[in-house]
Length: 487
Image (cartoon, rainbow, N blue to C red; front, side, top):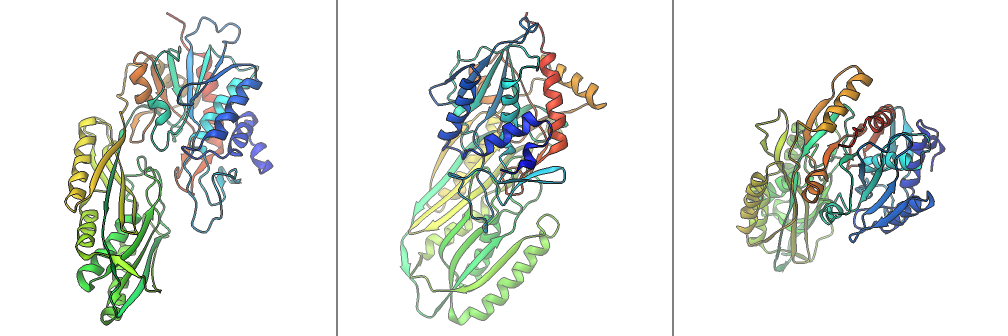
């Protein structure tokens, strides 16, 4: 671990982040980080325990003079998105994140950084271990599996927490205070198909789409970024319609909550169309790169000859598959009519796999309006069922309805203005925060979400601002001193 990270100010924040990032913590494989955070609390002599789903709760009494303040819950999630560049050799299950300083930014070498939500967790750790930070009674709630299902929040039972106010530290612009968020649902389409022998007198090709920015499938969905699965399907559609292209395999995208950056397809074309196909596909490649020259300047689309595969997808299923991907919505479905510039409903066609007689199309549909979420999910279901897919809905979680009259919102807004000379932006976001879910079993808890500036979350370009982290730290300490008195 680079010493330059540990030398950053405030040292207690960055040292805890460095310790955390030394522990492998991909979603759904959090055993080591759970033990790490439990040992952290136990070694401090604080009440520390797991709930049934393996969320970790650590309790710390109020500091002297703060006993009459409302108790608070400090909340962050332990898991991180595991994304890496194609040419990066890295194992998220065994290696710690390799960090470095780049001007005002902390970055990782070829992988996601884990600042989402590692900086929030590190902030909570700094408060728990402090001897000179004034605060009321604290319950630190470290949830699991936020990134791939919100499992920890969904399974946290009522009655475990006693806090009256929850501070969620999981947003990514330091001038924003979040009071609402989108809910989500996984839409998964699958079907089997018969494989056919590759026709004689065919030529094999590999088509590769790479170099896209990727990013958060909620926060970045309205930025006009390229989706590797959609771009690949556009190429396959043209090749099929004009030259009878046949698909052998496709592997596109990775995680539902990440806009897909890469896709690779193995295809064949009849030998008689070989030169014409290559000429045509290169023309489309140039068109696509021109369309995306502003938002995706590093987009690379390659077509290269390859060994002839033994099997290809049956032609009838292939036609339905290509047309369904073309018709399925990706991106913004509806903007909010209540909050300016807020995406209400969207979909990310996150993962497309075609191999060995099986098709899998994985989507993440988000909305701050439950009925709109289901409406779009049903639209996707219809597109996929029309070519014979079985479609399943899973992992559904609710949004978080804004409360503009929140007491803690007023406190944070006032503190922010005093510290920074301007008012913060009070917003709702198009990401999945755990507040809405936690509010289901804790409906009377006053909740707010905020955090330091993090760019490129869910992609290997993820980076955290050092100056913003200092601003965040100062903000949190002042909030703790100004928690209201008990009723």
